[in-house]
Image (cartoon, rainbow, N blue to C red):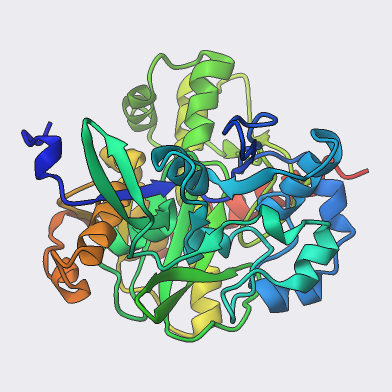
Length: 421
């Protein structure tokens, strides 16, 4: 698409979903079981038994099935007879292994910090956590800087260095040029993830939020505060594939716009539990306020509104933690093409929503990290290239904003703990 040959490419950057867990045989390179995706909830009961305080202190995370450690423990218990000769990785590690022909078993700190096996302060695998989850150390990949050498890949007929690796949300943070403390973004994808650059020391654990690594370039570590929302775009996919009320995701925009108001219909898309700021693996999807007059337009609008309300909840938690109010929201991801949603997001948040000139910021961030790794750019040079494409200004009265958000919070409470034994 770029009109260049493989020989003209300087480096490869890799970005993937972070917590999805793969276990494979080193000799054959074949997975020993299906990967367990980040949304999988099968280890909820095991997480309820974990010591929340020590895990929070060591990792910056909360005990939740979202993260890799309990997924790996489940695979070791149910899918293999022995861990001997096996390798564990998140999807980035799996791709590095395959691209380098099994020569490199590595990950970067952004992915390692999402496993619940890595110390947020030392950025190394922690023996106490390995013992807690029953994970042998020799299963684990080497942790290398996010911008640096991860081996050579034979791709498109050329040998190309893999020079940048980051989890998808940290890559988007870099691609959105949030390279200075205090800058942040949200990415609308299957779920939505709000990250704020927290500077060069691990941030204190804040209620409902995660502390994580933003990236490591050379010896400098940058940290982030994160709110993880599990289901946003996936709710629209469910309307399409599960219920058949829309044909394509784009149908939601005219359907939502066809209504003057939501008529009291709210959809809490806790289809994989609730993430930040609630962290309730037993919450379940809930639709409230239906009447005989409700139509598929109400469902479509409720799904879009839920994306915006969940983002507001996440940002309010961040504002409470850091003591400062957001002045604008940089947004990216597939849902940003929906103009109705972006305007509603600005309205219920009460601050402008800014969209970048290059919307694929996750891919851009991985490429930028690779470019920094081979000396094509500097970090400040990446920031200088960021451009705004469109801006949505809030226009909803404050009283209407508060009424909508108050009813949303009532709906969330009805979804909480539904599947709890």
